[in-house]
Amino acid sequence: MVIKSTPRAVAALMAVSLSTAGLCAQTAIKLPKNKYTPEQDVQLGREAAAEVRKQYPIIKDERIARYLTTLGDRLVAAAPSELKQPVYEYSFTPVNLKEINAFALPGGPMFVQRGMFDAAAGEGEVVGVMAHEVSHVLLRHGTANATKAQNPWLQLGQVAGAVGGAVVGGSAGSAIAQGSQFGLGTLLLRYSRDYEKQADLLGAQIMARAGYDPRALAHMFETIERETQGGGGGGPQWMSSHPNPGNRTVYITKEAESLTIASAADTSGFQPIKTAFASLPPAKATSDLARAEGSGGGEAPPSVGTPGQPIPAPSSQYQEIRGGKVFEAAVPSNWTSLPSKSSIKVVPQNGYGEMNGQAVFTHGVEFGITKAGTRDLREATNVWLKAVAQNNPELRVAGTQQAVQISQRSGLATPLVNPSPLGGREHIVVYTTFLVDGTLFYYLTLAPEKDAEALQDAFVRIGRSIRLTDAR
Ligand SMILES: [Zn+2]
Image (cartoon, rainbow, N blue to C red; front, side):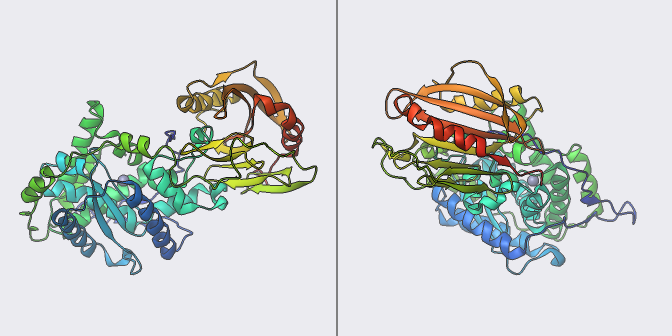
């Protein structure tokens, strides 16, 4: 499950600098600050694309694939030479999903959903969205986002897997962890309004050089907005990643007036391709995909023993673990750490593994972070728990929430009960506090009712050992 994150309040990174040379000049676009290398863009994109290809219904039809590649190649050829990266590996892949959406990963892999073709009135509109996506790639917006976010969690690794996971939207792991996905993919693929405007303007310029009228891009956006508002379910995906900077039609039209459109591209391939689409199996909805991938997906950490087998007593020896720049803690030396993109579980033997084809987390602790939309701890905690409960319909608060100290910060302890995958009930206590940047940090303890007492001392000792290090 992916929790929709609120768009990050982005500091006014004046990425779009309007040319002062006169009304007729095209807008100059400035490459945003980026601490990653183009090679890292390529590596990220390559690994994430492999993940997407595994989980998405890729259209194998030769005609459609070739057509999309022809369009993509035209756009890449028309890109400004100062933004071209020789190491980039462009690819243009059609996907049999019905939402109006397209996305491009760092370094070049682009995926265009069938819904985009179905909604487009002509080739120029599909090309417009592709030009917008190519512009995100050329301007390296994904890794520029990562640069400015300085997400302390990035050190946990599994970067590309996280991208793939967030794109695809499903992840195995503990049910609790699924409420807290704070994935890099979200970071890499959700753009600020500044970046959106950059991609629109550069996209318009590229379209003109490739022989298309940029106003088709504005028209496609209007269609997407209409779909979104009409509640047809076609457009929200696109809108959540590519927020409207406002006045989109106005500034794209204005930009178009400053541009010279090269000799018109041959668009005769569009109608036959619409016919080719009609011969495919019906398009799937992304939500069906996420459900199908929801259990036993590729991202589950390896098993630690066999769930259901007895749990050995926690060692009296403790070892240090560290979660990026966020926290340090001490855990029993015979427990195993399982880091994932937004959390670290630490489990005793037989506390995590596959059972009936599903990854289950039955004993241990978990540390994680999740975005918070408020500075009110109780409210932030409850919003997050509500999201967790969507995947755990029988999760219940079991007592009163209490004020606690976590690493000398004010925290909140919330006792919960849930049916255990092993039968009976499991006891969960979630401890929450804020990090300095307003992100919610949580620590939770989990054990089936019958084992709760045996693990209690270890849980208390781990909790007391937590040191939040994000302020250093
Ligand atoms: Zn965009």
